[in-house]
Image (cartoon, rainbow, N blue to C red; front, side):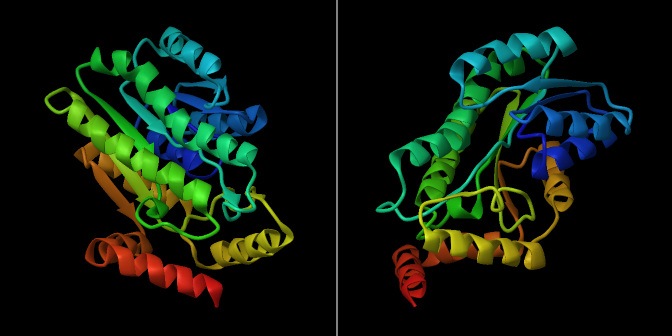
Length: 260
């Protein structure tokens, strides 16, 4: 099962997993995008079911395991990929926007893992993938809600990995660097200055980031090798190591660079 499967990494994962012979349950809020992803996966011979759902909607998510099991009978891999972004400092960002982002980026992961865990534990083997970010290593001004959610996903994943030690269910927490997806293009903004920042970021992502397909291939290899910690892109590795070596200094430098 893949959430956020209508575009970006989710759609790329659908294609790569279909090529591996997986049956797929694809989840997204955007039903037309979901159908497009399903068609791409079916073109590679996969059995595909689609499930229109907002991962932040607890009631809808509580119904989802029964739907998926009715279609497929089993769930072996759960990929909590759905994510959104809000650009803006805490002083400017509305509490509604903050709550909206946390509902999708964090609670969507919690609902997916919690509600599908019994089905995964019932299988001979299973795996949970939670998508964090390189911003789950370092706090970035103007990305306070996004960083909060990705740090939370990292902590949740590490605790879940420990809880599931000795079971047949593995856990991978993924920290992508720059991936050319819709997440920045569709970001909410809090002010005119943030809207300008968004335009600059969209341009940078279009020119310098890597494809969702590359990220999907790395994630699938991590599942096959049961890797708990997955970094994608040189910037993710650099951010991780700098934060380990100089955790306070890194945050000060980031803050000073933002002011210039």
